[in-house]
Image (cartoon, rainbow, N blue to C red; front, top):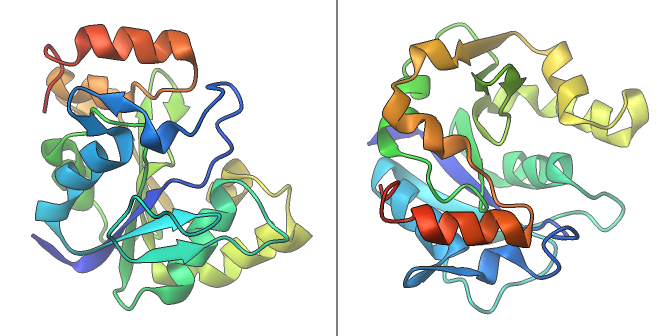
Length: 197
């Protein structure tokens, strides 16, 4: 168990490309939110969910995006504001194939960094990363207009350990398959047994 860290599951997106609330979509016998929760709960002392408004289908503690903000930065800010641990692990609810081994791999690289973010196919994956709670000031500055308001802008301000896919076992590469469209959801349903964690 990673005792110095709280897990934050981001489930507040608008799901525009999917056309419906992704967190409630079912993959096998679980919703996406339930599946990601089941993966991270054994690894962290506390797990919370970030959302725009209270979810009746969720028993976990919930934090809510400030009304004037939107997007993943708003979710990260809401999470950092309420946690007591020195670290936060942020994961999107539409990453149902994330693995405990991947989480533990990137957790082991946190020394002397503000954040640890895996990179897959040349693209940083900030919604499967660790963030030190001391970054809250920088995050809020970006969110409130001091930057471009993006995760990329936030990472540019931090001392980040980027973990290249070459340092990640191939069996964990499926973790970066996120579900944004109905077509990706159909593919995930076909692959769920092959990629089952």
